[in-house]
Image (cartoon, rainbow, N blue to C red; front, side, top):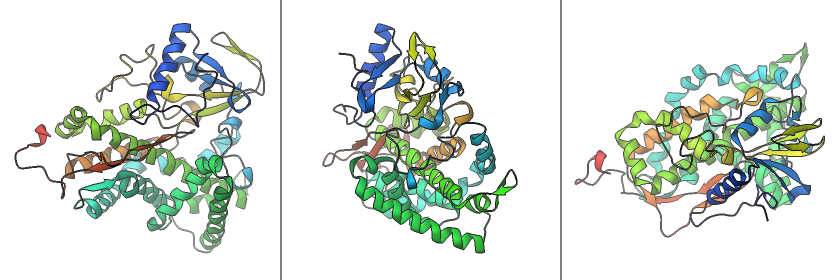
Length: 409
């Protein structure tokens, strides 16, 4: 039986290393051997699974045929089951709303927060560097995106764990424990209602204040539209980023050769960040077929669901030389991890800055670490996937043993 038939992005078989990449590579190899870059899964009532790089790119750019109204399935647990702002909208509605938040996520604005990001990273490292043992998502990689998202929204950074709990409930817990997820979403809605009232009285210079005071075609946004922006900025700023950061540090914990190279050549972090995104693509994306179409010999009908499996497409040897080899200096690197076309990730520049600065500061202060053999890392499957637990051990204080130099880590 084809691996396509039972493909379920929320339940991908994991390898001995705790990741699904062996299964992804097997699916990719089947697609190549049978020349079927698109296959049918019987899960969730049936949907098309797209694994080829070229086919994924073509579908993502054909917004007339493939609507974003089906971008999340099973559907996320958003308030009142509303569509996710921007993510599940098509043009011209998507363009109208995106213009409201485009400027704060420009390359220049991303660099403007670099110093604060660097400072926050070091403050967090200070809290565990003397322990010699830590779970990185709990202590660092969940906290950094939550704090930075709070900064953009003008929210208290110390509330970061609450924001992470809400995003996890909306995107993941809703499928395993809907009752608990509903409770967290209700808590978030209550928080938002108080926040909205306060911001209307005292607007600031943050993204949320600009959304509250904005007008679209001469009309102010409704409370529900503002709440939709609040939800998507939390989801986009926290979920994807925390998972790719954790997966990056997991890889560096066991890949000593790669870690040594980055310690010795920190300038490689720019290209290495994109290679981490290609190799451990955190997201997938759904589409809904709007009219009859044929792609790669597959006939699709209106109403059918399509899943763009970026983690597999980004290992397509038709596009990437030695796709299963991590090359920190890979160039060019035309990965699709951040989407493409009108739906390219709004925070792409900010994400790259986060990855580079957090890795740079951690490597500078704790150049040696490895996985904690007393605890297993944990991978989370889903539309957004990655490591959620990365227990590591390292020399207390983070310094190098006297007998080693940085190049000899």
